[in-house]
Image (cartoon, rainbow, N blue to C red; front, side, top):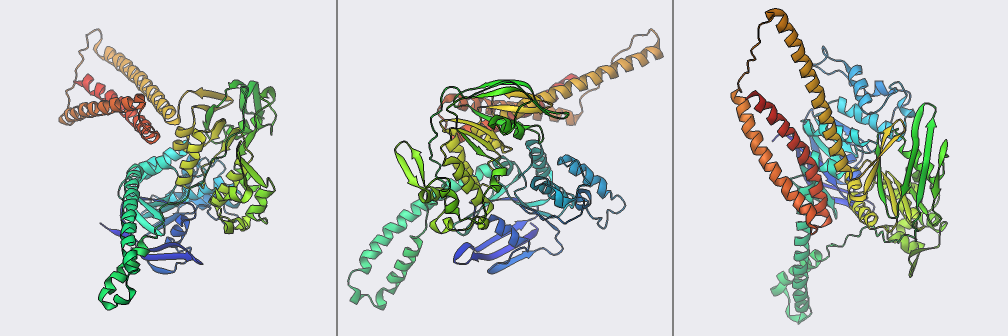
Length: 608
């Protein structure tokens, strides 16, 4: 294995707080590594250290000589006055000057990332546009090793899937932080976790990591119980006959202190406590009656009607610019439709979590003061009220953190604070616009569990496929030009249906081309041979094609058997949520592959 990066005994702290201590890691050519940790445990700091953007206390970070490294920051700085095209255009490198077409490559990649005005100055771009331009630049530079901090933020699902396939096929060595679990699972072949100041490595994808981490925590719990039992025995000995111990039993004393140190491992890492109950919601939620909305020639909704039911949970998907955010503003009354209306039930109490809401805090205020301005205490349920400080502690804000100025909070802390201010009002209809950005995977899991059991209504706009699959009962699909389709299923099922439809359309197009080709060939043959009868000559299968047929038959049989097992699991009613989610994801992978293999097999059989 060719070593690209060696990290030895790396330690980093801020004041009295240690982020990680004496961690060691090797990165080798071809590795595709995902980094997971809770917010605040040092993921971005770790990447910044590797890229020379931040100092560390001790240890070594050594790259292979001449290695070219590309780094995508979470919030990349943009030089003033430079156009998006100039910024993204890769510099020519020795060996490719003759074939170099940098501006054309940059224009094509920027178009792929939905940047239509390539001449716009990069310092004038929105945060999302800047992230996409920076991603285009780092990919076009074709470095030996990519370091990516939340690459999927601000990308729509189509772009995420494009990037997913690009990185999966690419031979570039990869080290990245992302909260997108499907992305992690498909792209990465190794997961490293920063936990309690230490680094743990798992050679497998995200699904493998989850299983092995669970085993590690179980073993650690058993080991800790064993240590505490031994400690109890040693403690009894330490308290007996102190005058008789002396040097004779020094090893017992040393052993006692080692056991005591080991017993202080804290396994009970706290998660955000999302246990605020929804307020009562009546049977009438809202009814949309022939709603239309346009901005000039751009049509957002055209004569759209829908009656929203109690406890519905809907995901909203569609390309950027298709009208998702406008739809939400119409629903909340922030915009008025051109025609038609929304009839909202009297008991509906909105809770709106938006991208814009993140900027609504007064940075000069302390965390606790910002919350107390909303309410001095918070209703958890009909019998429980707690103070604003106690409520913040459920969102992992310690008493010290509650006294911090909002300007000093990290991105993840600001999102947790914003989520707290939304939920403390006891809404019964949650509207969440991209809630997953900057939240760690552990907090996302807690939020998903909360929303799945939320006794109210939910509308979620998200590009996080895993999140949508867990939360949404059905989807509003914004197709553009005012068209909104109601899809009765989760996101993975929707994407499978779209893929099947595209495949059928391509197959029909190929068939039409083949018919046209045969027709033209027949006309030519008729011209050449007059009225003579053409004899169709069929070629035979090559050895390679025969071998392919055998492999396809084996693969179809294996996948069909797996499909049956998965369908039995999903319909059995005994599997837990995690197993159902994984089975649904795997089924979404298997079905299109079966169709693809069967289609190819039929083509080969036709030759035979």
